[in-house]
Length: 151
Image (cartoon, rainbow, N blue to C red):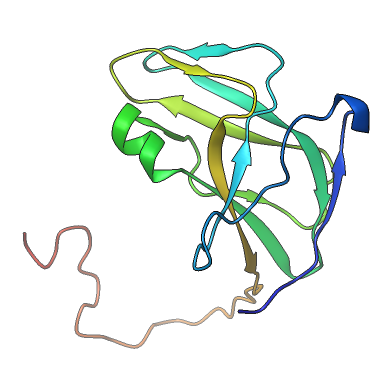
């Protein structure tokens, strides 16, 4: 598997840092789990959106993005997911990485410092250049939209 170095900067002094670096939990994992950097526990009410700090900022290499994706266990068990899934951290962003969570479940959900709240996927970016044309080539699907193939 290919690796790419990414610079990370903790936003608290070393002696106060109790969070772990984002990490791959298994050999075949595509996403790195990231922990909540909240100071005190935080309750997300059903339907509520919150922005959770991670306690770090990063410098991505040019040509890459960091996708912020839901953790499947949180989504399935509790209805807690990413509002703008997948979120994108751009290569030129240097602020604190934060995770926009929403509670789509029916019960309040408590986030504690150090809870694994999302996964991060490093991905290459290809920039599009648009070329205006007067018509597009036809395909079998053509303009068939949502649900066009049936159930």
